[in-house]
Length: 205
Ligand SMILES: N[C@@H](CCC(=O)N[C@@H](CS)C(=O)NCC(=O)O)C(=O)O
Image (cartoon, rainbow, N blue to C red; front, side, top):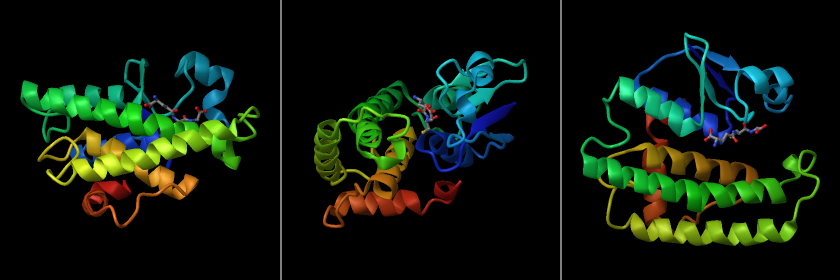
């Protein structure tokens, strides 16, 4: 078993943090996104037809892509500590928040990255500045929404740290570091949450 990964990219980071929280150690195969090593015909044919990272290679030679699918594979094998919820209700609520974070935060951050960053211009020559600007506003509004939500609970999905926190952390850090799109320190609840999840040892995995 091994994980094709690229340190620092937000989706691979989700899996790295997840594995650290679970105490699971597996070999990593560094695959350089900047050198397009994940876009060679061989990688597309043999590892991941979608080309993205991370990808988990199992011992039988088969592959699981999609960060959350990889995490769910490990969650089924090793349920504790739970990061997707224990009871049916916890699982439903955690999944609801995970989907909200992916659809309403990660996706617009991705749009700013694709349409507004000079770093992606070479691979996206048809960038549309208005799309980046609109999505930047959507992200800023969502920071305010999350700040309100976190007034009444410790973590994104409730009282327990979960995959929704991991996904939100990776998205916030990426947006702040690469898109100059950070929440305001005046957003006290979001700032408290961010400091708390960033202080966990897994955050530097
Ligand atoms: N939905 C996929 C997204 C995978 C993805 O887009 N990964 C990025 C890194 S964060 C990547 O590989 N980018 C380079 C490329 O697509 O060539 C997941 O959740 O893992």
